[in-house]
Image (cartoon, rainbow, N blue to C red; front, side, top):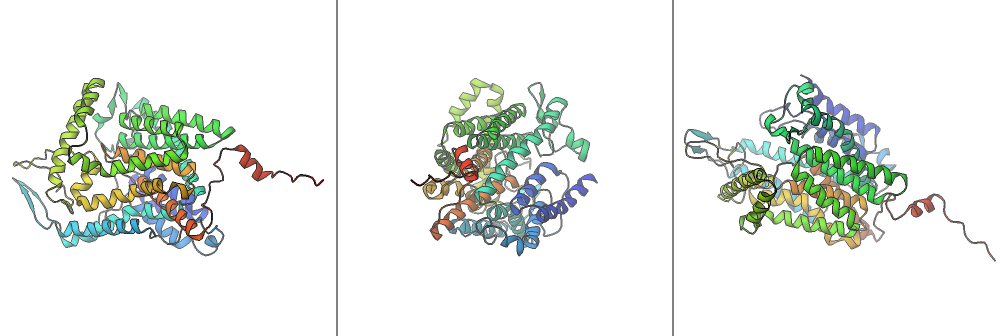
Length: 484
């Protein structure tokens, strides 16, 4: 009952945010707040309509609130480059990827009209009737991306998103540390359910926190992104704020360690080192290179060009138990990728049709990495469209960094998104926040192109710089020299 009330009340919160806050703040708080606070155990399932739950309702409510409340005088009172026109991207590459993703969802339904039989187990066919649900689900998924592209493109808005990510991590660390000490009970005590397998959250003589997310691994990668956000803010700050962001970074790193997500911790150390050691230009280029590698990773994996045996040998020396778990994951990826390649273009669709069942009808596969799930359910077309939308903005920013005048805030968001995308190799941690970050970067790319076309300077972050001096001279310009 509590879960239903909280989820259904969230649109009221969203409308209040859009009525009382700047659009950029309202979009960020609507999506990020829902992800962190709403329960997983309530959903509305209607015929031929995508599932309405904590992932889809906030985006729908935000799109509706923006359409009704962000117009007229409010828009005229904002700088022209603070809000991009329309929800539909102007980038030709992104438009092609959008069309691929939407058309691919329909094609997946139309090419899976056969019933699958594995001994006594029968998996139903997809009917044309299901196309509306698949297409609607795809659109619901993309709403945070579209809203962020429109309202979070400007450097000021991107710095606000970076601050929001770091502050949300600091606030969420308190219930997380409570669960580290007393076990992950908050979701059960407040909403009456536990979101996953309890055994997976007993780790290293203690507990792996969950709070209100679907698994402790989801929480760990969120803390990783928050840590990287705080570190980026520290790198670009000066004076008192610099000290505060340093302390926030240290606190979030400690929380990340205690969250007991080894993969998220390793990602945080790698990308955190890049933030500490590299200038903004090389941070952007580095995330672009990593994005390209992540995009082609399934192709490299299928061609046996990923050194899995070397990685396994290294893991064996560190922790034999972890190495056995990693080998199990890799073996499952192999059989799932082989199944996916039986229908390579548009995949097998839903209802578990992408999974591997034996002749007795028993499921012998485990789907961990999101990339192999995406290829199995939507095929290579769907994979390239979905991961292209998430990764292409970073790749394009790496190619065009000279003309974009990218700020530390944009680089920090790219780092946070890269962390999440790396984690999609072993896990399925794709969330509305992932799409929010990708949309913000896509908007920044488009905003830079618009400024370049207009012949004006690229928008800059007034909070960034080397430079307390720069900010001080804005407030107190130097006096002209006396005439002699």
